[in-house]
Length: 258
Length: 341
Image 1 (cartoon, one colour):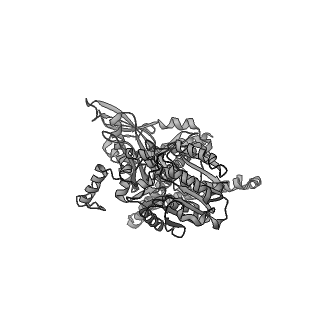
Image 2: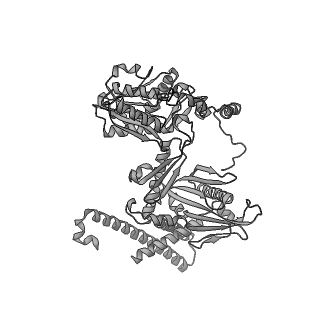
Image 3: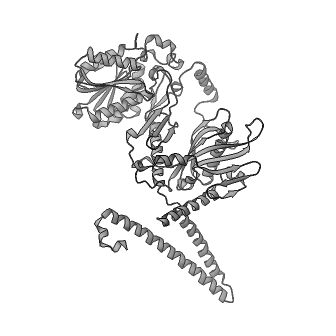
């Protein structure tokens, strides 16, 4: 635009030398931009992220809308009993998203769990930043382990679990494969290990009429899960749907506990 | 006459409307009566000084002041008359897109960008370039400017259309004279809350930029872009300025609503549902102004006929005479059609 006077100064957050080394890491090591600046814009949030925490994906933004729509139309529990769980919360993105979307009128509590203590710390930080510490409780542990007291009582269950098949990991974009935590990406041989565990968990943890929504690696996994729930877990769920993401990939599996 | 008709009061809404229109007209009449009185006052003073032997400096000064204020008031009045559309008072969003002509057109689009930014700054609007897509070799593919301030939209709405440049192209290997085009679109900058309009989901086609490959956890992305098309009319908006899908979607929807509201107003449709899609398509291609750099220098507006050979000032943001000419032209057009009704 305009050329300023020679005496105009440009303010930088970091000195030129440091900027240069950060830039080198970005270009040469393919360190994700979000880790360099320490944050990610997601929905209407700015979330702190760092090595050891999965960077929230744009596709996952829809998960919050799916939850909000379900609550509006169907979820049928007394207000003060509404407890939601976000499993494998990472940065806390989904937990914070749904707490804000549902409001105190839509949910009393959101339990966000993660196996990684780094993730638990970052999630707690983000929860605090948005002033939601009275609604969202971060618990460190494996999947449903920290939630035993809610067996059969959860109003809703959401997750973006690791879903990439192990053998695909070396071939991933360097920003992802070489920098993001493997723990958050590796879903086992066909990527379904954790998703299947979640399906079983949904059957035992959700109250009747409770809602679940999981993100997957695409059409094959979605089809497999729907099939699995309708056959191996027959009678547990109804109204099982597959929802596409904005790029047209079948991405989410949702449904209700019978 | 209508106000004294007892049947008027049977329809409250219509009654309200008529009364408001009546109040409006009454106010205008009062204003004009005031102007008339002031003219008469000034006239009286001038006559007095002619009759007197000595010239009373104080009286003359009074007359001069009356006339000065009167001129200002008349200018303001004319402006309010010219800028009386429902969105004219709002800020504006300008979207520039390079058209036919390759790199030369992209450079032309960049020149237009600069022209509007300079205009905005000179007019003291808070001017921000919120989006800019660089051309591969030079210039820009597209850019979006937001201008905050009163009446920005009223002034700029006439800039909508295709702008054509004729010059010896610096991008032509033989330095030949070339014609290029760029499209300018203008929308009001409406605050989200003021747009009381819901567009049914099924009328919208929303697409986002693809991650490539399987997406999701497989990919790390920094950019997001949304394109929303209102299928019944074909009006499309693209937004890439914000940093999340949701934010881009919200902004794109907001821009789309603003565009549709303006088109509805232009077509005198009372609802977005009634917009004629074919009319929308036809308008986009309208050529409105020619900018010739070679072999002579001339900027000419094809609608009003207004022209100037001071192309340098125009490219530096001096658009006021063109804007005024267009506003008057628009006013004449609309009052003629009013009279024909």
